[in-house]
Length: 153
Image (cartoon, rainbow, N blue to C red):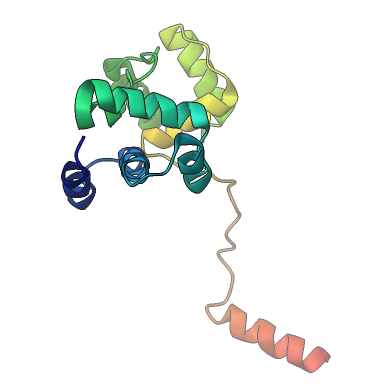
């Protein structure tokens, strides 16, 4: 791997930060730093630096690109997400426990409450506690409150 190739890849920076970090590691190694020093500079383990260097030697710069598989597929299909979102729109004032029950009863999928919160948030909803609004409140209520507080001092 030539130093020019590394410089060119560093300048392009179209890849995620992990790739950039790996390029920097290879740049440090190419300028004379050993794997241990490179790891200390980048705060990465020696084993990671060694693995990146071997991947770079074997596959060139493409060896530095992460190849995550994307993780485990969701239990809730895209079609089910659309149906669940429609149910949430139709029903008013649902709690997360209600949403969890709907997922279990209608779709046969049991999720933990924190995960239900994540799903609901991903669907574009947010949740909060309802607060009462007083209809008879005066329009200048804040000014009246300030005057009352000033008079009490």
